[in-house]
Length: 294
Image 1 (tube, rainbow, N blue to C red):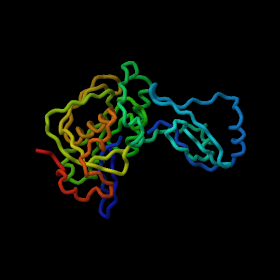
Image 2: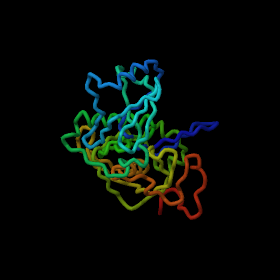
Image 3: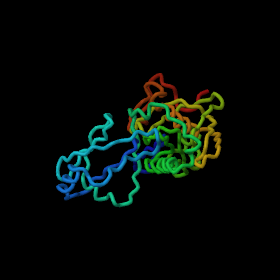
Image 4: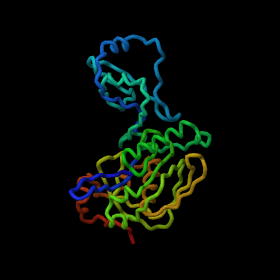
């Protein structure tokens, strides 16, 4: 889920919901003066084989990139998937091709089909593979960089059933004592769950605002079960079982929804959707109160 950072005169208040990008290289703007050379290079068939696009899993869509020069120092890049618009990038990016820099995937935003379709299970043979371990490592780094407390593989453009989540004392310390108590929020260590299966425990529910890194800048009230049980495999392929309650249970439900192609806005309470800036405004007349339901 997502962390909202709000500056105030007396303290830094961070309210957190969930985190949950299309897998592609980021083109970084850098100054470049060799445009004429590159123009000639890209108008002829190169003597070297063209690099294949990054492919994390068999079912992830592969992209072919087309380049066109707009000026001596600017490239026009189209991924060629009919869903993406042209992206302007500085040609200076090619100067860094020889450098070893870690390129993290970006977070996919609402509307991308990968977020609205069910993900596929990871086969037992693939669990320990370098490819799956790389996906998991990227997910953890993207979640922490966002920052967020949970992320699902579809949120970085990978249609596989993998989720990561963690909540820390530092994150929790930015919330008010009343919020922490009402949400039953407690820190927990990093969890990696492959092919998770969620089951509710009891019928008690609670209503709280949620957010999502794939629907950045907005919040809405969602009703969730207070206790759940999640089973699956850890990153090493060993069976894992989590009995969760309170805010951790909410995060797990949110992330597992992503694997079913469901966003929190598909489950939100009507008339509670709002921008982050309006989060503290009162709910509309007739909306249910926040907190646990009797």
